[in-house]
Image (cartoon, rainbow, N blue to C red):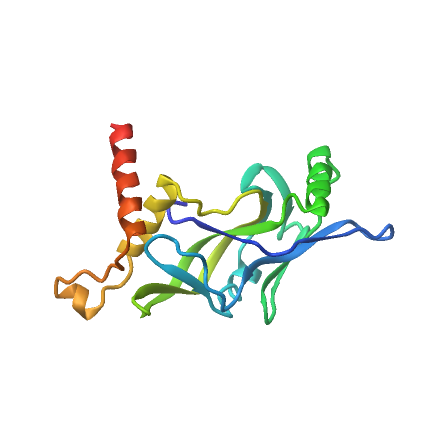
Length: 205
């Protein structure tokens, strides 16, 4: 689980409440061919097919805020269904009849909770440069969970900066980088994130 990553997207979730059927939460945990926000050292884009192998293979959980104490559904149990369509990773969750789940449904219906996130491990990716910035393409992942979330997974925090730096450093090197040239994008944000990392390291010692 040390390679686990998370991404959150401001995509609309809906509650379907049919008296004749179980209440379900539907929405997109990921959207294809749409650039992420600046993750500090790179941007990211999810390509169609990224989840195709994982959906039938992996036992994925639907969690509230990525918290394993609050399980909304599970693919193995048939309470979480997932599929790729032209837009992205579509999920349908059948939440349990518990008070905390009912409270969450109210928050989603009010629009207080409006983002979804997914936890994953990268199995295959590709890197390239666009307009002087590194771009990471996700091509295949192992899914761990999909989650309605309160906040995005990448706020400007030292922990986020550390994760982004590790991902960036692990990318395949270009010819110029192998020759000793830095392929790192310039900009004040990179310096700011690095300063936070140094402060974080100092606090831990």
